[in-house]
Length: 165
Image (tube, rainbow, N blue to C red):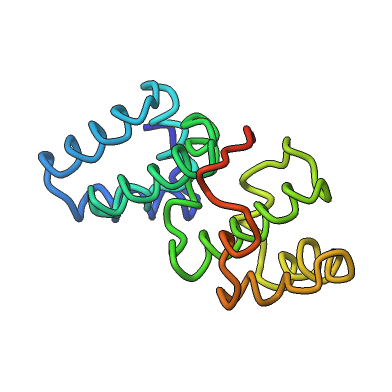
């Protein structure tokens, strides 16, 4: 499968594969392929973060739908940032993406921001880079992040899809 046996990723892959049936493996592989992943993208994603295969079919579909249909990200971008599929939609993905929407809407950040820089960042790094940095320009940014202010109240929604990497 292309793993170095002396790495943690190899152990993760071994545990992942050993913990599922062949049928479950194929179902999940089909789901990723249905979202447009090529065979190469699937293996790249699995080698990058084997635990992406431990998610349920429903969980994979829900997150891929959010990334592709709500955020407008290309499926290949998600394949390059597989760890994002293992983040909590409610606790990490949606709050951070709300902040991104507001910053993009206000032209404070560029559209070509990589998904990994947003979703792989530690909480502290995300707050420093995306919240604290723009607090002056968007005073309600922390409230948006915490879900106290909804995007529609600001005239912004997830249905507006800027293209991103």
